[in-house]
Amino acid sequence: MAGVLGRLPSRAIQVSSKGHFVSFPGTVRVPKTATPFNSSHAYQQFFSSNAAAALKNASTGKKMLLASLGAIGTGGLLLLVGLEKSVKAGELELHPPKYGWSHSGTFQSLDHTSIRRGYEVYKQVCAACHSMRFIAYRNLVGVSHTEAEAKAEAEEIQVTDGPDDQGNMFQRPGKLSDYFQSPYPNEEAARAANNGAYPPDLSYIIAARHGGEDYVFALLTGYCDAPAGVVLREGQHFNPYFPGGAISMAQALYNEALEYEDGTPASSSQLAKDVCTFLKWASEPEHDTRKQMALKAMMMFSLLTAIAYYMKRHKWSTLKTRKIAFKPSSKK
Image (cartoon, rainbow, N blue to C red; front, side, top):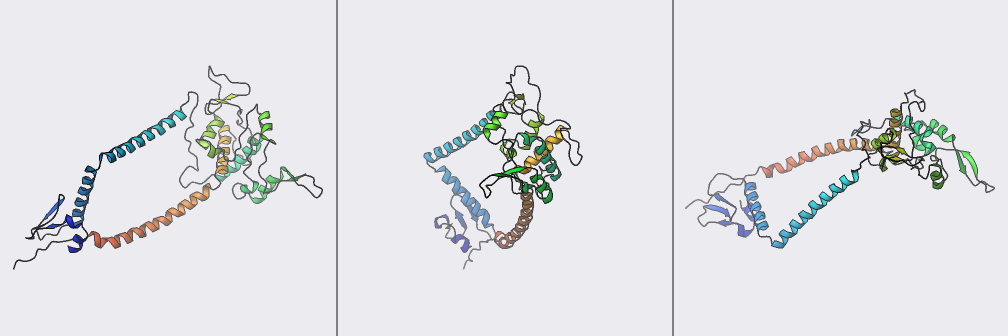
């Protein structure tokens, strides 16, 4: 008892001269008894009453400051919600639904056969207008192609290199270290060939668009006739998933637009699904590795949590179960 009372403020302890009780002014009174009492309960009542008294005695300025901070925080939250809704508002713009991608689970990896088919779609369809200047042929090794297959893919292109010993530039077959070529020499040439629109680079298009692969899939399969009253300029097409509805890119994916090497039926939705998976990998090449590391980390931290819980129970069990009893001095 002396050890516990020694840790309390001196003015909070009053012991009667007759030894009848130990009191904490305004908080708790423990009658004289031989029955043990729990010290943690006395601590809780003592400090909770002190906190309430401190709040009650707070100055008006502090109360106004706390109220102002609460009002500012609430107003900021409402403003963010309002701005989010206003950004998403649009009369002719649809928001893509959530599709059940095979890689959308917590520990599910990308479909690498779909990545290979998606590369075929990009190579035969998308590469005519869009570049992927941040992806090299060596990145395909171990993901969708073997090293020999990736070398064969790289050798199909001609790369300007040099200068040689005479100071002249020359053409050579591509190597694994070469990046995917752009279909246009510069941005001006790209705009001139697409009615002033600049086809974006697709290396990180999934990460750069709100909705990710859901948006790209909906955009590729969402072309339709413009509703009444919507006027499109020459060279534009209507797509309700594109902001504003008017898009310069024509529909590129049709049923049987190409033939897959593995014989998969090439429907328009299958083409869109495969190229979206390929673009997802291009935007996040560490996707599978990150999920593998997350699984390992969860297993490791689960073990550490169990050890920490055992040590906590072991160290604190004697303190949490301790009882303090008041034993009055005997009368002589």
